[in-house]
View (cartoon, rainbow, N blue to C red):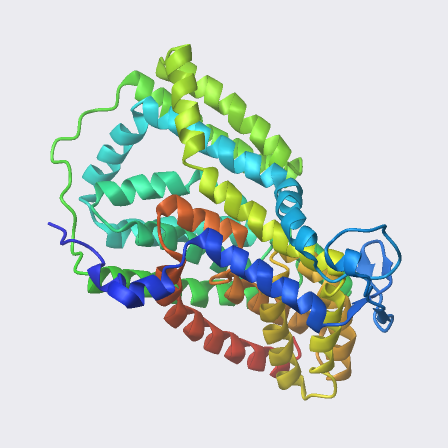
Length: 470
């Protein structure tokens, strides 16, 4: 029998109100803070070739002082404009438009799972899973986390895991386990996979191409990172579950056999996941293609599950309703990037941080790159965009400090991935927390010890990398 889980992770009274800020209000606060930064920081830009910055070409751009421009009005000119009232408001719909492909994909994932749940196959399949594992989360969690981490590290999967989260949440509910642990199971594994990026086709071609080392080279070190980080992550999650008072859940002693329709639905969904991974890796499917794919899978699931047209439509709409908040959070995260881009201060931030690394020892330089990338992750949540902007600048500085290309890439991966575990501007992470109904403050309290431990281990890895000339 499981006890009521995680009561100790939920703050009460004034303390709870202080940290459990609504995620929409939190992102709006960050947006306003960034608006203030557009007045404090100089505007500037690097020259770019094929989307990549050219080191040493940073120039300051004069800011407009026209009061109409400060309101976000007036004719456009060549001067940079601080964020005005209208500009801040306009950044929100522009952020929604900028992230529209991801937003619609999230909504269609919700609709698909609404239909999947309506077929009854999800409940029947989870009954069987809990029955066969005897409700042993200490067996289920490591197996699932290894699979999720491998998908992220070898194939670059992350947003695709939105498909997996509803299943993990349903499993946690069946086990009478707090939803915090379901989302932690997914995010810890996925983020660690991205930190290691053994052969991540989304990140490595960009990062290693910039530092001019063979693509996927140095994988042995990153494989060691994956093994050690994942072991720590799994141990931390299981220890937290044990501390919550959970021992073993009740399980279905005589789970009913799956019907032919249920087996067909589960088989179809499994094949769909395999095809999705293959298509993303081989045919470069992205958000639009995946959205269309989810619509097609929804129609086939309804047919195999024996649902009528009206029942399917109602279930699809109900599923989409549950994704409204996650979709809005993704749009607001995009608004922050739009605002900083319009004010032309992103390059200023990168240029300023790069100056802190100049003329440092190799290990200190690698740590400085890691922490620089961590800071940039709050302003530029996109992994590939951050690589294209920052690495061309940090790489020459790292060379002057005696760093090799793969060491710079490793420092970049550490900074990017560790901050992504708790970043308040990670739209995808906030969307997953919203789906699981886990407050951001509770998530940070839960993840901070693990993030600090992994940061210390990352610093040790960088020391080894510098010493062996990695």
